[in-house]
Image (cartoon, rainbow, N blue to C red; front, side):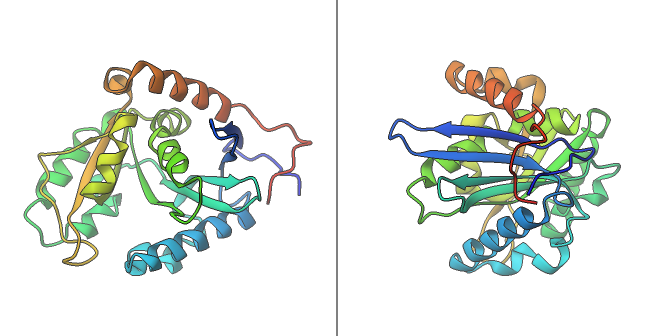
Length: 238
C-alpha cells in the first residue's frame, strides 16, 4: 500500500553488494507502517529466541509502537525482513532510559545515570532491539549496515548523542561505525548471568574522526538517501 507520510519522514535506501545481492533499508514511524513494524518485531522475537534471550525483547511492552520514535527495517530481495533496530524518543531525563532497568542494583548504575545526564543538553536517543537474521546470506552486510546508521539516526532525531546497550562482543562489532563502549560504566549481567551487557555511545561531532574515510563516505551518502522523502507513488508496506 502507499504510505501517507507523517511527521517522521519515511526514507528508503537500496543497496547492492559486490556479490550482486541486494537489500533495502526503510526508515519509518511504526504508527505509519504498522505491518512492516510488526514484521520487524516478530523477526526480532525469533532472533532473540534463537539466542535464548527472548525475555529481553519485552514484546508486549513495545508492540504498540508508542515508545518508539522511528525504526529501521532491512529487507532482502524477497521482501523478507532480515534485520533492523528501533529508536526511542529523545530523553528529557536519564530516568527515561531502559538501561536503568538493565543496571538495576548494579554498581555501574550511578555512572550510567551520570553518563546520560551529562549529554542531555545536546540530546540523547537510545537504540533498542537491534538484530540480524544470521541465517540470511546477507547477515554480514546487514550487520555492517546497522553499524553505519548512527549518523542518520542522530540527524533524523535532532540529537548529538546516541546510546545502545548489548553484549560486549556485539557492541565491539559496531565500533567501525563510530560507536565506542563507555569504559566508565561497568558491565551488568542482563538479561541474565550469561551476559555482560555494556553501554556504547555515538557522538555526532566525533563520528567522522572515529570512522575510516570509506565508512564515513558511505554513512554520509546513506544518511542523505534515508532523509529523502519517499514519493507518494512508492509502494511501502503500511
